[in-house]
Image: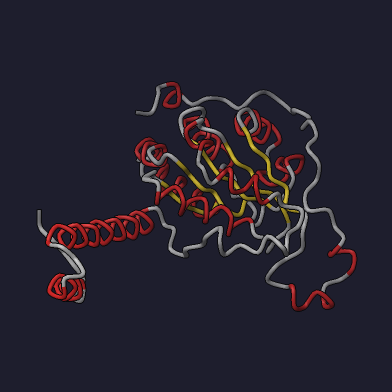
Length: 268
C-alpha cells in the first residue's frame, strides 16, 4: 500500500517511538491511522467537488437559536440519512435567508461523509442544463446522469421564472427519479403557488403528485439570517408575510401532460 503521510506525521510518531512513549506496533498503528484519515479527507474533498458542494456548510454551524420554529432534533434525525435509503423527498420551505440552503448543503455534506453520492444544483441551472441537452439531442444521457446520485439537491425553486418548457423538463427528471432516489428541494414558494412558478398548472400538479408522495416537509417560519442586523430597514408587511402559502389542491386545467415516446422507457 502506497502511503501518503503529511510531512510532519512520520517524524512526530518516530520521535514518540524513540522516546519509548509508543511501542513499534503502536507507532505503525498511528501511522496507518493517519494515512487512512488523509485518504478519507481526500475522498470527501473530491466527492464534494464532483457533487458541486463547493461551499461547505455544517449542521454544527447552523444557528438554531435564530430560527426557533425549527425542531433541532428533527433536523439532526434527518442527518442520520434514513430518508435517502427510503428514496424520500425533503422539502425545505421558507423566506429567503432563513437557512434553507445551509440546511440542504449541510445534509449533503453529511451524506458525502457517509459515502453517499450527492449532486447539488439550483433549479435554474438544472433546467438550463436539461434544455441544452434537449437541443443537442442528449437529453436521455443527461437524465441518466442526474439519476445516478443517491441524493439530488435542487435549490432555489421559485426564485427565478422558469423558462417555457422548463417545467416539463423538470417533470421528466422527477419522474425518472421517483421512488429510485432521494431529493432535497428548497423553495420560498408554497406548493399552491407552483402553478405560477412553473407557468403550467397541469405540470405543477404532476410534479407535486410525485414529490409529495414520499415527502418530508420542513417549514422555517423565521426571518432572514443575513438581514438580522438590518431588520429595521425591512417593511413591516414584508416581515410579517407568511413564509409560504398553505398547501391547497391545485385545480387541474386541460389534459394531463403528454408523455413523450422516449419517456416510456426506463432510464438505466
